[in-house]
Image 1 (cartoon, rainbow over the protein chains, first blue to last red):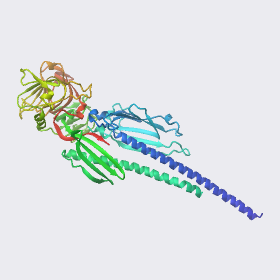
Image 2 (image 1 turned 135 degrees about the horizontal axis):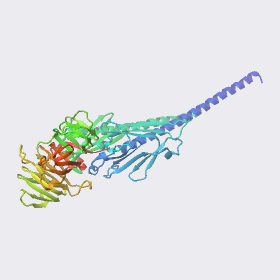
Image 3 (image 1 turned 90 degrees about the horizontal axis):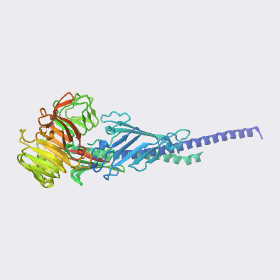
Image 4 (image 1 turned 60 degrees about the vertical axis):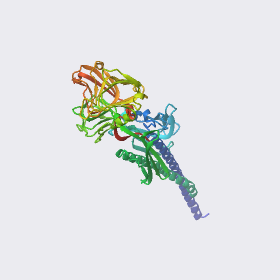
Length: 199
Length: 390
């Protein structure tokens, strides 16, 4: 075997190794991108689902299809904290008043995900068992405002003084890739239920 | 490597396009909702400006979508109006329904045409809607839980008053100039006393009446005496007391410019058979309407408190106590309902924090008046929103 053949072999090995490394690297990047895209898609989809559900429910605060049953809708808000809200609404427009309660669980409630920050968001209707939504909620924060648009300090002793509120939601993916979580953020600057102040 | 890319790329494209579709879906839902809400708001505004407007909006374009609005009588109660706004944006459709009713003066916890020298001070608390056509004079931090509206604003312009229900100036709700609405209802299916005074006592769903203070009572069921519950004295005064079961409006009209007629005298407690404070489903409701004053009579029974459960309306006078400045301290007026008056009347005199004659005041708003009113009670001529369904 001549020296040129030896050079050919060494050269082939080097080139082959480089190509192999490129393939491995590309595979790794594509896997990461694929995973992140999928996670983002899931988080965004969860956010749209959550935002739609919340907006639909909050628009009904103080509504009653038989107004005489609930003459003073300013009393519709029963509880208002930074991470929870409880209110009265005629949910099915059947003339019967319902109580809807949204509250955030703790990080232990979503212990089955790898994300240490996510929590279950609970929704309870009347006295039925609360339903926990595993949507990767990390932040679920309310800010409440009075009739003059001044923010109200917690704790709010008289929920009837609330005129409108702001809700911020942050969702994260349940599992990370490379210690990085995908996230999506939603904020409704002024959620004002029209029935709350229509009298 | 090409094989890897070919295998993964479709999934990446799918994820990207799904995320975009997700965003578009949310955008469509928000836009169509805003369209429907705007259409309903525009229709409500048109109705506020012209209470006879029923034309609606037929297929109008806005923001790349369309909306349709109809205004019709509400089937379950034809005195009410239903606005239905239907909006379409791309493939999304949304409906908003607004129920409105004629606005009555009985909805006000407090209404005045003239405030005079009266100030609202620290310690004053008002629940329910509040309106004055005058300046609202404020000293300290009175508290208002209902919405406050004024025509001329507050004095001083900036104050420490707490407006938990909101505040708006430049709003005018003028008093009516007559009682045609009440007299028409009384003539149609109520009771009209064309001249002279009327003395009435409610005994649950019966009424005892006489036309002079010394005469004897005649009685009948309320449904026979005034089937629609409207009792109208065209030229005289009304004296009233008793416990009411039902819905009644009594109205004393007088001669123009005369103060000897058109007054309603409260000769003793006037209260409901079923107290709405303990039984919110109570349907008992009383309207007291006077061209001049509504007066707590200076008599023996009224020397130890008086309870008044009614919505009161005084077109040219106010709610006052007879001989408020000379009668002895007579306890407290427990008023449950609302008071609309041309000018706030006096019910006592005080020195420091104690009264020296007349009554203390304990006024509470009847929340039912936010959505219902006594029969033929004077109307503002406008419509107000009862419910908004999205």
